[in-house]
Length: 324
Image (cartoon, rainbow, N blue to C red; front, side, top):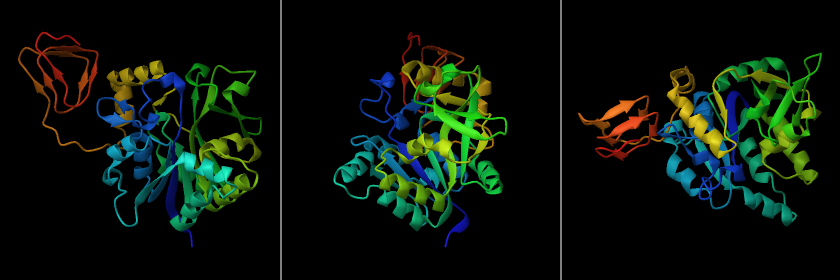
């Protein structure tokens, strides 16, 4: 029996973008550092934790799981370390190998969804830095009488990349979707999908079974975005802070934007807390000779020199006469 208020999640960490090389040569985008002490993975995990998601099915590329386990550990910071609340990590390429062998390749996801006994499932990834109140989205989803609720943010087209999904609305407010590269009439403002959906679990099981029968293979979120226009969907506009990590420059700009107090507060200190790995460090030490201006420093640092317009991660030392 499905529990009406129970939610599970499929969290994809398989996005690869060569524009971010060499930053992701040894790690997924999900574990890139952000604002001194966070990782990009913290944002989807925190949104899920704040919505009391009880179990998470995570996928990662082969050879990229170590940094995820190093960061998440038991999952206690996100409430995933109990008998009922857990997370599982699977290798995306294993599903591809099953497909090549002619075997059912979505069975593990389907089995997870059935065993979760959750009425609703969140599909989410780590590409976008945002802080979405999924509890509010779920309330809207329940009243919509539709199987899918897609979360989007209105942005200028330069914020998106070709593989991102754009949602359009017709005169009857019916939503359809296209990849940005497919559009020939790009508008000044577009509704950018945040690759985040709340769907009815039973419907999702049927969708994955259909994809498997048709030989379609990709992450669940990408498949849903590909076929989104086939369905009558509900939408939810997110109006908070958002960064789309699509290049080294966008990654740098997202970090530096945290020096703007309005961005910092909107993302990290609103009503939805952002959780990260706990590190029991001593407070940062500032010598009498230190000079710090418009900067953020994590714990465990020693500052004897000058720091301006910078983000300093844990356990860093700024020597006397050094200028950052």
